[in-house]
Image 1 (cartoon, chains in turn yellow, cyan):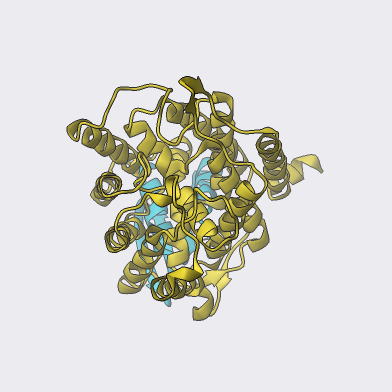
Image 2: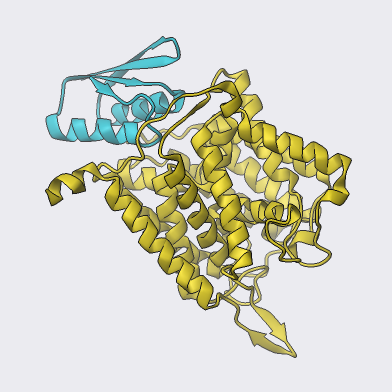
Length: 366
Length: 67
């Protein structure tokens, strides 16, 4: 593939890294300046789709990312309402991608931010993410497709931007309708206006640059194209250097990392699920938000699947618990039996979906 | 002619890659309906030594790849 790297991808990666550092400095949880999975989960909590008290807040970042994408897409005539590419399948895959991310405690974007914060558990997650992408690429090479999209109405294309905008206005007007964490990650957040503004800029840049965590590795493996992967690298380097400059970098370790666990097998398997599912969906959770902002109804359904997946993850105790220190003793977190079962079910579901949508494998079977 | 209209990223590039690997065409036309697909196919085609021209009509694009 061409060795050319689009400078906009590097600029977007740099902007995401700086934004993550800024939002963390202003109040977002450590190593969580941006996390699509965590923030959708927090919105699920704020709207009481789940009732896990530590993770409930209406994150303006999600609103900003989607609306930033919509504004940029409209300005550059790339807003195209379309849908119809196996939406129900995408809903289910979106839910399992979310469950995998919450087992690991972060989406691919937070994985990179955690890596830049010195969290070695995230490097284990990276290995799992890469393995998951390899599985997805195997099926792509066997003609996997969720079939084509079709033009739909403008209202369909504006569904997620509209829904989030209306919810955000209601949140501003009548905050008492929502539930907010008093402690835990949900209680930590940057000022609302800053979060919204920063996310609007990042959303616009991500729309224009096509920034995608899964796309970077997938394209490198399939086409030897390192364009999107350069954005991934730019985020890592920016966050790492930023943490060093700000005096927040304490070296690389698996232990005592913020909102992370060192149950490595499940860090790995959780991210295998995320990588595999994201390849089937055609993009990481961040990319799904951006595509939904561009009018893609299938990505809107995927995001709603992620929202429900987040609610299930907490209602059924599937999500990972962070490492902690109890009475001076270091306690490794991780996931319980429910979470382990959910990851295994997720693999089975992705396998069935992958096999059933590969025309080449069907021909070989016949 | 490859009709990749409506296909999500990266399926259009995979379709082109499979055709290039299988038949090594000197000329190939591809239809897509998203600018991101135009960019991705153009990048892939350039890496395989193809010159790419693009025609836009009513929100749809026809790429002509020539060696």
